[in-house]
Image 1: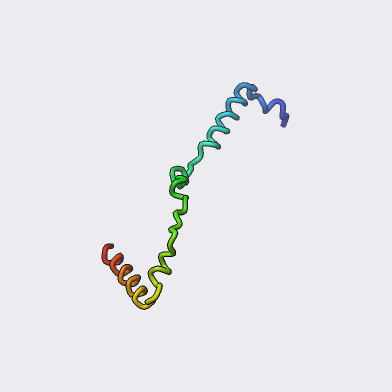
Image 2 (image 1 turned 60 degrees about the horizontal axis):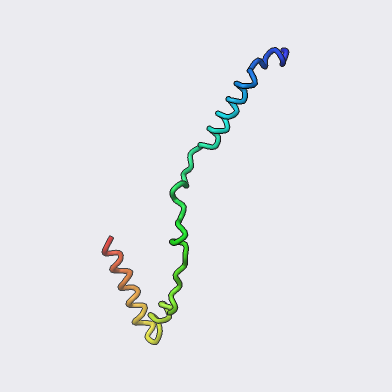
Length: 78
């Protein structure tokens, strides 16, 4: 089979097909679009006081009871 005889696509048509192919390749589905976290949400607001240390400070048993009670309240809200 003669290759020159088979390749009869006009160069302008070949270029147009390449542009369509490139366009379709770049416009594929993007499932992460719109899921990017804004910079303001990435800023870590570290409190000056260690809240866990303040909660469990002197009476750790009472602090743990408070944490468990708060978690139990969250479960009831759902």
